[in-house]
Amino acid sequence: MTAMARKNASRVLTEVAQFLCLVLLLTLFSAIAEKPAASQSGSGQSDNAAAAQGTDTSQSPCKGITSNPSALKNSLVEVPKYQKTYVLVVGGSARDRITAPDSPAIRSLSIEIADDSQTSSVVQDLRLNNVQRVPASDQSPVSPLTDLAAGKVDAVIMWAPLAAAGLIDLGLEDKVSLYSVDRPKNPPPSFVVTQAAGAPDACASAIADDLDSFGVLPAELLVPVNIRSLFGTPTPTFSMKGAEQGEQVFQQICARCHGQHAVADPTLAPVDLLVSIRRFQFIGFKYIVLNGRPQKGMPPLRGTVSEAQIALIFQYLQARSKT
Ligand code: HEC
Image (tube, rainbow, N blue to C red; front, side):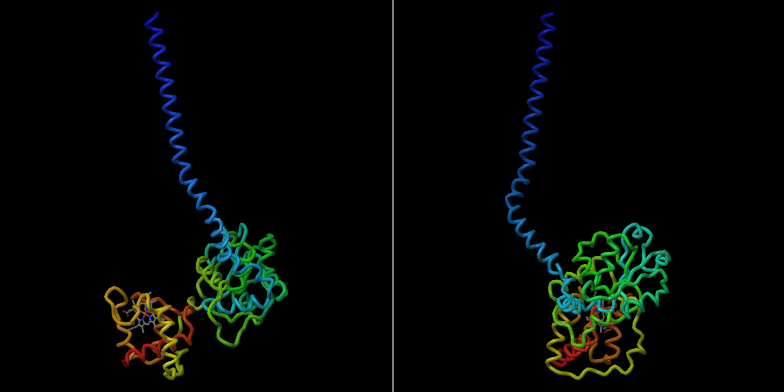
């Protein structure tokens, strides 16, 4: 009996000891677990401050922009890559039915557009019938997106820079899918500019990044440039100023593959542009830049680089090949 009682007592003791061990372990654990949490909340304050600023730079560069017609116009004309691109913005349950810009299911969607001549001609070319039109208005330029968010329609077709500005401003980015549709088409009449756009402002950059991350292709990429369309392209008149500007463009767009100095580099593109440029007519040069040599690692750059920029790069390479 006593032996039994002793056995029981020792079992209780072991259990108590085990329990204590567990408590100790748990305390240790939570201390460890808390540590990063604590250090996070320590830097959390500055993180929060940074996040507040971060929100300023990642979201609010476009905050309220759709209700400020002149700011909107100024920003949107500075999204060069997507000036000629229109997108299909699909929302709600229709997102499951549309998986590609050429899904036949597009015909079954109810689509809303702003009634301007360019957007109208996009839906006409796509032969879409189920289209509701709202007046194109400076005061509410993204009202089709508001209707989309309210579930009044399945989709919207809109000029890409305007659509992205609206999605950012209205906070709808994670509620829609975007596809570029149709071939390059000029911006809606109220967004056409005659003079060249300046450097992108913060909102314009946010818009371009957004369209990139939605996987929207510049419309130019959907159609190869036909060499015939380049016949008659005048060779740019060489100037030192052009060459200097061309150097900047080259560094931005070409240097990641052709190297900072445009000479052959075994780790990069296996061509020496300073040699190539001597044999290239401008038209051939432009043709390669626009269409690339996709099988050999040079991507088509149409939609990414403007014709004026190609002319500047040409002058830069000419200047370099002479020295
Ligand atoms: C993603 C990488 C990449 C980028 C960006 C790029 N290129 Fe290329 N490029 C290549 C590769 C690779 C080749 C070699 C293709 C081949 O073997 O024909 C090439 C070839 C060329 C050629 C043909 C040269 C020859 O002698 O046949 C020209 C001209 C050219 N690139 C110009 C440019 C210009 C101008 C830019 C910027 C506007 C640019 N490339 C941007 C990768 C790139």
